[in-house]
Image (tube, rainbow, N blue to C red; front, side):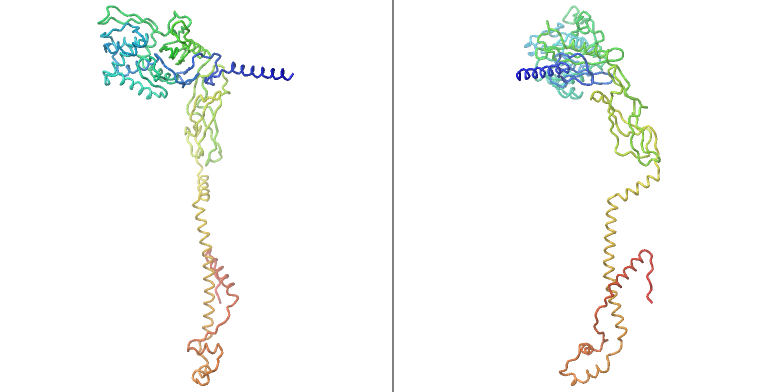
Length: 528
């Protein structure tokens, strides 16, 4: 019986875990936009171009081999250096056609390029982008290096990496201009979104990448007839019904055994546009296997165009928060509104109440405040993802009340450390003065006592003392009283020694009281 119970519990646990894995696929997909389709590609990055909002991602920063997506960087660099594409000519050198890497991989020129052939720069760009000709990409790199650099491929490779860093790519390294396999040649889905977006902002690049009809390379010094080729992007070719999606307008395909299918795709519909980067669908052959990079992109485009729409989340009249304000009369709070309206791509059926507003306000807001003053920020959060941030500004002007302002200054003075030090010094001064006054009053009392004795005893010593002094025989051997002896020392004033009066301290305290009273405007009593 115990065995059956344990077996049943184990079955329940296994079922629960499997159900969780099915319902919640263990990927790094963005949680903000939930779809009912799990892309097969190991790395995916999808962005709405109107808002630059990431609507789907999966392993976006995972290192992958880009394969022929590399040619996007090669061609955009050419377009940065040259504008007269039809009149600029390129000579296909022997170094291009005998490149060891290309020959070792067993690839050929898919657009029939020949050594010594003079070809227009615009035609060579079409060869690289549409037909993905590796020799064309290498020839373009040599062209730029010979005209603008030191003539070596290494110079162009440095240029590629420098441009990637300039655009903000953080996990990309190029070692060739065509994308053939090298373990040190890598990138990520997120980085190639950055590169593709930049390239598609170039009109010439967007026109080349979006060509969905066969291209005819004109005759040259080495050919007597045109050379026809077409794009490798099956999503732009109606003949491929499994992949075709009429709203796709580029960008580039790629394949390597080590990379699987890679794909950078752009699509636009009804005022919305997206770029999707799909990398590594696990394919080991470019022929006979489904291209899931394209199939994933198609599914994601269909979902985005049908389920997502541009929504206004907040506008400038929406009160997003209230904040306490100081120094304002009869007003303790001020309303805060967005500095500008915020619109973003959201699921079409979303309720605005599901968007959480997280505010961060300035520590202290004090009048005067003018309407439009920035007083904080607000983050707009949907499904635990920040979809936007706006500045919070004062929705009204609030003037300062001068009385409250002055009172706050006074209060601030009393609260300051300077005031505390000042009070301590005053206390020390008063205590010191009290001690000094006590000592001074006591000394003054003693002095007055001496004067009183002095004024009452101003006569000379009595004659009896003189007779003793004049008649030495009467004093010889005789002991005189202490008072008499003291009086007989000299002819000075006689001041007998007396005990101190017990009332001297009380008189000193009384005098101190009178002194302190005098400090505060009191009058000392005159002694009669």
